[in-house]
Length: 85
Image (cartoon, rainbow, N blue to C red):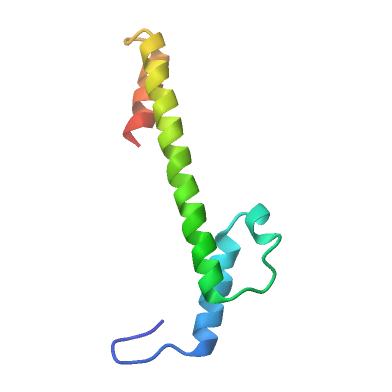
């Protein structure tokens, strides 16, 4: 991509924006159409924050499951391995 001292071209920016947009789920891309790079970056940041919240929620739910499962059971080991990931 860009090296030290070399400016990134508009074509490279457009390619990066396109690649970034392709990483967003379909539901978030549906209403975007062709958007500015700044709007896409804001939407991407919003999506990443929602993923963090989802991970935190799932981690809390797994921790809650640990309380209800025998600590020596195979299910407990699965939950522990998920929490380590």
